[in-house]
Length: 227
Image (cartoon, rainbow, N blue to C red; front, side, top):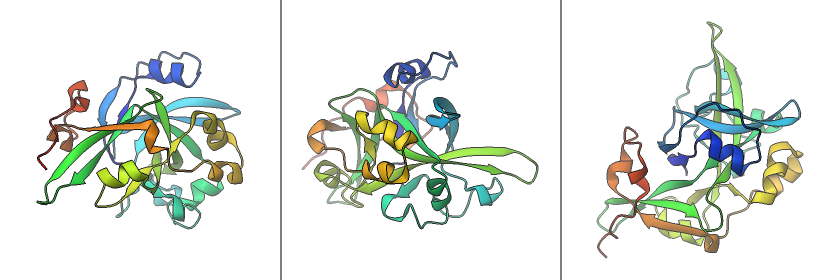
């Protein structure tokens, strides 16, 4: 799963993904949570474009209304069959979700949960594989939203996210164009677990549990939990 992550500001995103400078003034967020607006990169009219969309996909058929079930993650195994996600997949509505890292929770033997911050050792800014969709409410309001694709966890995430061993689909730098603008087969082929040797993780404060907290201190290392 991936329900909380760190999103860079627009200038950092544009540098990392070779986008033209637009000066939109989007600030960094250190605790992006479902239902919030966050930047994604879409392939529109033959070029990549940076936009802010709602985190948590609202399908085109939902008339702009959030459904009963969580849609901030889309399982790789059911992309082509899930009612919420098969439409964006078939329409090639894929996107890059820029991130500096993400949070997952480890369940301790006593049942308590310790949050961890996970980032890449080889790149400061990277992209999750995402899908986006557009839904129109009855009053004409347009809701554009996205979801992050998840898959079976690698060894590192299996140890950290031990209750549900899943991880977000992190794209290799050379795979980003195929996911964003390639055909279905090419896009599906790049969805592989990121090597755990190229990732790093450390425990962080429980302050991250509340999405109201959104500051750089959230990613600071916290003392390891007791054995």
